[in-house]
Picture 1 (spheres, rainbow, N blue to C red):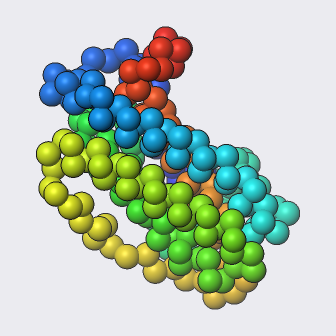
Picture 2: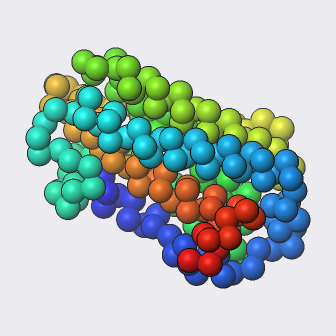
Length: 208
């Protein structure tokens, strides 16, 4: 699934050098926004840290490895199973608003929450997946809080399409779990970069 989200890779250093639009800059400087941002960064890191163990606990096919060049060969199977691509997320700039960034984060988290929830009943080991689903949901809640601060709709509507996976056998379940976790890993890395670029306390991150 790594190849399916290559379009979502970000130019983090260039993003940090680009000035935020004035209205976004004022909101980002708000202390409450920064507090929620810190919680979001912590949850994002927790998700990233837990993905390898979750993968190890539920994916037992030796050829299915995280961050492997072989994952590109599974693109056709991902389409057959029905795994959607993660939303494209770019760093906030004049051409990609804070609202658009938060929307992409929310929709990406919602997608992976639905994917994991759909796959979980078919897995032998569900404990780590359940914890990961909970963390993804908690991060989504923090993103919604930031969305509300941008004076968007009071409630964020769910994604328009539901996830319907085609899993005719155990191998398909294994591949679906693998691709979902691999995509969530890459998407979460991009979320982490975007959040870091908005964190006013992260001087090191802004200079790198």
